[in-house]
Amino acid sequence: MIKSNFKLVASLGIGLIVMGCNTSSLITAPPITYPSNSPKTAELTEQQAKHWGHLDLQKDTIPGMSIDRAYSELLKKRKGETVIVAVIDSGIDLAHEDIKEVLWTNSDEKPGDGIDNDGNGYVDDIHGYNFLGESYNEQMEVARILRLKIGDEAYQQAARAKLDEKLNEANAALPQIKQIEQVISMADQSMKKSLGKDSYTLADLEAFKPKNGQEEGTAGLLMQVMTLEESVPLAIEEMQEGIKYYTEQLKYNLNVDFNGRIPVGDDPYDISDRNYGNGNPQAIDPGESHGSHVAGIIAATRNNKKGVDGVAKNVQIMSVRAVPNGDEYDKDIALAIRYAADNGAKVINASFGKGFSPNSEWVYEALQYAASKDVLFVHAAGNDALDLDAPQNTNFPNDQSSPSSTELEDNYLTVGALTPFYGSGMIAVFSNYGKERVDIFAPGDEIYSTMPDDSYEFQGGTSMAAPAVAGVAAMIRSYFPKLTAAQVKQIIMSSGISPTLKVQVGGPEGEEKSFSEISKSGKIANLYNALILASQVANGTVSL
Image 1 (cartoon, rainbow, N blue to C red):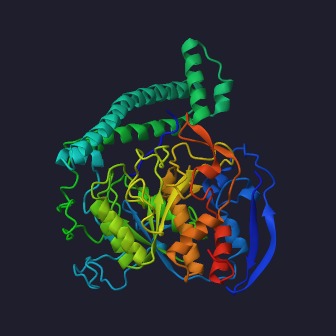
Image 2 (cartoon, helix red, strand yellow):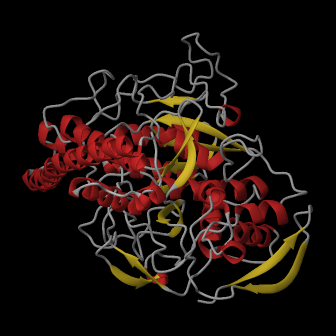
Image 3 (tube, rainbow, N blue to C red):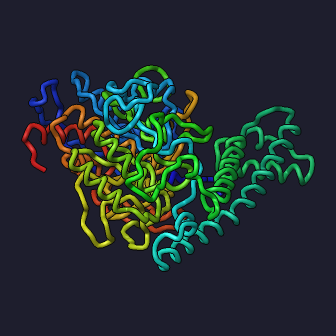
């Protein structure tokens, strides 16, 4: 399930190797040492805010992935091969100005003729496939378990406990957010009338001279709001998003009586029932934007003077619509992984997850199949601010079939999310973590990327961190195509930046841990370093 967040309610060293256009040419230079562990406290400029994930910790004091530096210093005279990256997600706006030029096209399929021309089992799959058909709103898995009485009594009791927890949260939060939104909106309208203007700044509020106690209270409330958000209209918009989120949770996601699968027409709990969906993975709902945002992070057309630049070039995005507004079905995810692997994807981005997975074996088998096809699977760690190493904190899919088991395959990479501020607050307040269950961290908070209808927006989540790393993986596979998925995973984990500082995890009331203790690598993904190490491995000068 795609989850929302509402904000309102060391000395480091890396080796530098400069690469010429010949992949066998390596020039060594002294290591770069970062000057200090001092956190960046200044506000980001507008340009930095929209681009921070591409910046460099050494040059900009911002924990980005050194994307710009890699392009300017390492890749100027190099050419890479085309890499297909599958985005298993909601639908994508296939006509977006910053996405349409980087879409994968199945050249063996004739559009619109209703025939499976290439014999891959899917009709008219020009840019990918749509496993959701005309459906969009869905239940959480716990609601489906109770509606269909899936599993034994203990499993259903666990689902009931989680559902009750979520229902209590939604029923408590919705009226509170509605009340706050109403109070702020009324205060906003009153202040506009008092000032005689349609918009105002914090300076306007500070200079305002109230005529009575009510006006004084209104000004004080709005100044408090503006310390939490850039503007009052943005705060109201965020409240309205919260209202929409919890309203949909109660109406669809947590409603045991709702069945969102009816339009699809299949049996989602029968893996052999595969004649469903259609070949158009275009987003169909006005609120269906997640897949577009993710695709832009990976590969929005670079240097076209529009919107944003993706992490990777030489990429074709394969859109696989399999994640609804609710929890994804295990069957859809398993078949989506197999579809991507069979149709040429070398990297799969998976910015979704859920706590219950009654048919997880189908997904494990699909992941093993993808590994056999040399496909790297990049998964978001999740947005519950939980330690995934704790057995009770399940997050599916994953690469361990039981809490005590080892990794099923070595093609699976789990990514946590960073903020742009290097220091104790560097871990996004929502990000899951875990020394064993999370592999690496990457930029994921307040990421600016593509949205439907040629628009752009900031969004935050581990859903944004995973595609950043998927973009890094695609770049390695483009410039060093002989490296395997397992090698690419090891390169990303080994080449990142290792901050020697403590960070807060577990949400606003969480605890401080050493950065090295919250993921398996203890590192921040870094394209610059990854390309350097990839060149060494590809040339045989370094063995993983």
